[in-house]
Amino acid sequence: MRLTQFSPGAGCGCKISSANLDKILSAVSEYPAIPQQIVGNSSKDDAAVYDLGDGYSVISTTDFFTPIVDDPFDFGRIASVNAISDIYAMGGRPLMAIAILGWPVEKLSLDVASNVIEGARRVCDEAGIALAGGHSIEIADPVFGLAVTGHINTELVKQNNKAKAGSTLYLTKHLGIGIIATAEKRGESNKDDILNIVNSMTTLNSAGMSFARIPGVNAMTDVTGFGFLGHLLEICEGSNVIAEIDMDKIPLLPNLNMYIEKKCFPGGTFRNFKSYGQKIAELTEREKVILCDPQTSGGLLVSVEEDSKNNFLKIASDINQQVYEVGRLLPNNGAEKIISISKN
Image 1 (cartoon, rainbow, N blue to C red):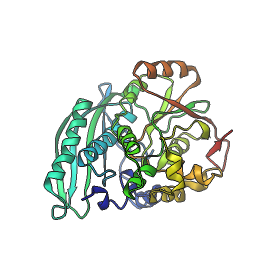
Image 2: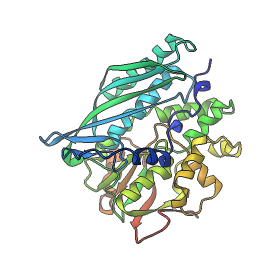
Image 3: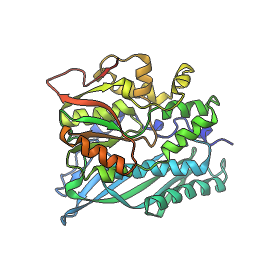
């Protein structure tokens, strides 16, 4: 029995669209401001941050989804790396995780659920944290994820609404996860390409801890279910800048064009474009399906000031973190289109 047959929207592709999420949250009454809460949901950031008042802050986040692969151990690993990534995207160090498990006990073996949790434990060990507990429910389709707590020197917190015009944008992982995962679900992928996406999705974004210590890194987020353009748009709108992306520099997974020709597109791609496409300059169909593709456990998107680029690249090299320059940020002088795409 294949886990992905229980996934109407696999991995981060099952996220509620950003437009629908905005509608949900806009109908919720405002809560009183808490001075110690320095990052909440108003900026659409990756995690909440609470200032302890002693120079350090607590970071709190949660993430869970339906299976994106059939192997339960890998599903647990991917879901855990994805959840922990939100801590790294804020620049923090994870401290502890608790599991969130929903399982159709009448349809799927409990041994399969055990393998999912074992995958999570393996990732938590790699991140140097404990999987300290959790909560489980019976549910029609399997879901798994983590709630993660981290900490950070308050001065080092990296938010997605502090980017500055003149900065260069870098990405740490290749795009195309959703496309190849959809091909796998349809039985149209090859083994090497699945190994590539599993390796990508199970690679921790721990470089975020090092990048946070660079003063010229002014904004950081991870690229997940809203696609590259969706998460870049959050940076741009929050920071009042516009972005120019060089399509020729976007790192893509091997053989992606083959799967694009087969039209292996997850439904989340078109939900994403419907949510924010009006804010993006004209795209070709190929650009749309790549840049709006929902990423699961995607890479970090980092905004770096010009005078810090060399230091950023040196630190990335020192920690063996590949980074790809993909574009730049410009002042927003009332532009109707927030993101534009250039190509040779």
